[in-house]
Length: 122
Image (cartoon, rainbow, N blue to C red; front, side):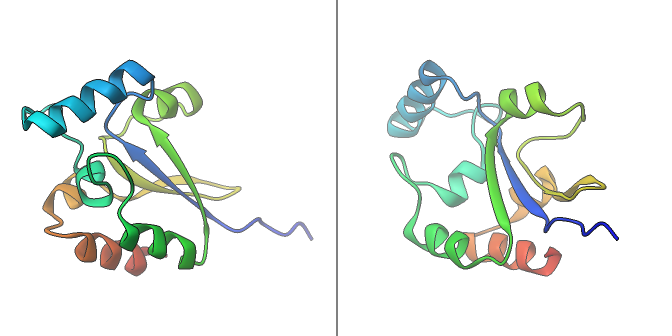
């Protein structure tokens, strides 16, 4: 019998992954000039301007599954799936499905809310 590998959580940020895009994002964070289309809800909950929040790092170290992090362009280059960004997906040998949608992320009022939603799904 083939044994399935454990699932992986894929966190997809609503930003591009190239250096120039990341620098522009940081500049908008510093100047407070993000508009509705340029702000990533997942980034806002899990990162400060320059680094990952310590509470988020701790959560990721203690989560019971593997994790992977992609920007929306990296996701599109790797997977043929039309989803809203940002998102959290669960990948197994058999499937790839959104377990936390862009709406759920934008409705999370805090990092604690996001972690609660993720824990309920895994």
